[in-house]
Length: 343
Image (cartoon, rainbow, N blue to C red; front, side):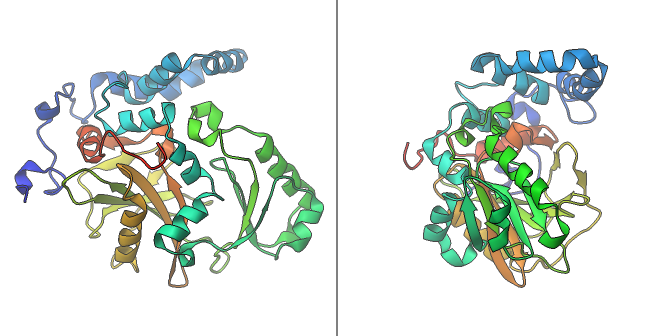
């Protein structure tokens, strides 16, 4: 067994930074370059004259892959990305975005992934599917129950919770759904595995309780040879209202790091004795077993567990850990190179 003092994740202590040759950190635990870039990222956008925003955006979107990914990585993480020999968690996520395995398309496809989930852990963990289609008109909604969730098969953030269709403007729902079918939202971040997914609209049961959607439990599972899987959980409260994030480890204890994400604040709540957390961890590890890293999202509804989605490039590479050393420490737990199914 590995000595806990040699395993900063196992001991919940941050390893000395010189072990990974990190840039010197300031008092806030961030390299000076990162602090300047991340601070200037939003400020720079505000300073850009409105008339230049669209031309600059078109210019960035026209960049060839080597320049685009390096520019984006520099903007987020304050350094260049090592694509040839990625070590950090963020570098491995960017590598997946730029050089995706075919299996990533299956996992990201909200319809195709249902087969993988059912075959791996059982169909009882699937959110009940009402139906899917590749075009939407007002007649589409005649066959739907009064409440449902509408989402795209190939996008992110394309989700609409309908609590009562009789209170909705059906023409607007049609317009929204068809705009999703026509959009290529993943092309903006160049998460290439999304681009091969056939665009469809998916209708699911809403899993509502008192008109509210359930919390989202995002289990980040890391696999590396010779080690037990490492798991940390993002517990999301207030979805579609006031989104907050609570972080903890598999045993419910707080992690030795924070996860900084734009437009997301840390939750004031501290959950204890979370129902079915251990079962979620077992299921997540089964689904993640072939991969160096996989995020498995769960819902808990009326004492039943459902898998929401599987994610291979969370946040399109924007996860920032504090202290910054955890980008490398978690990268060490991210088994690499990956010998993936279908590759």
